[in-house]
Image (cartoon, rainbow, N blue to C red; front, side, top):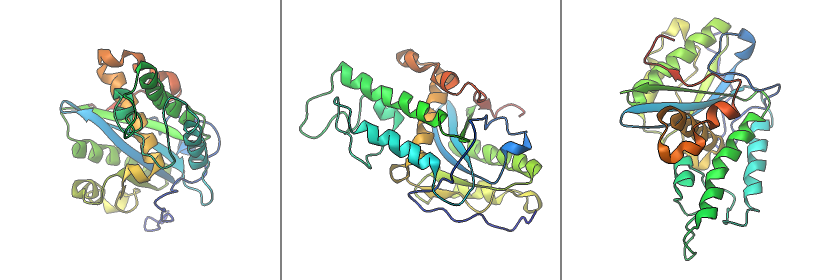
Length: 258
């Protein structure tokens, strides 16, 4: 394999290559056929006691994106929900939707959301996860560690994925929610050994508000986080992650050998 080759650069708005096949476990990356050249979309969740990353993996193929088109179709359906006024391009964040916050539920000059509207907003997260589960060959995964910073967890995740792509003889790129200034995330890529580096280039740091599949990764990260911490107020979603993605591994604890 030519370790110096580069995957095609990704445009900001439509990054994912077209997937095909069926959903599989990103966290169990040992079967070589699951690890073609890939793009990973990552976002994080957590609190001061625990960091979590959720991610989507799609095989790299030039051309229109099935993942983007199916996620866009999901967003288009939101425009017809009578309980709130969703407009194309509005950024979706799991924490806001589940907490009844944000302009989607509190439009300027509009009435305060009632219980039904709040439930409908929380249901958007579940619907989004179910949409991801139906995208052919889109894989999901998540990792966590207690007492770790976002940056430390990211570095270990990069190392884990790099090693598994090295075993498969394939390459990958990372697209991460960020504003371009996250030096520690770039450093995690640059610390990989040059003779065994299969994560190509620095992470593409893009704002999730302008990158729909990063918003999807946010849904995955928050579902994994609630599965782990089990806040009583979010009991209704404790089982969303394993129920929606039954073929995917449960969140991996990167504080333990993996």
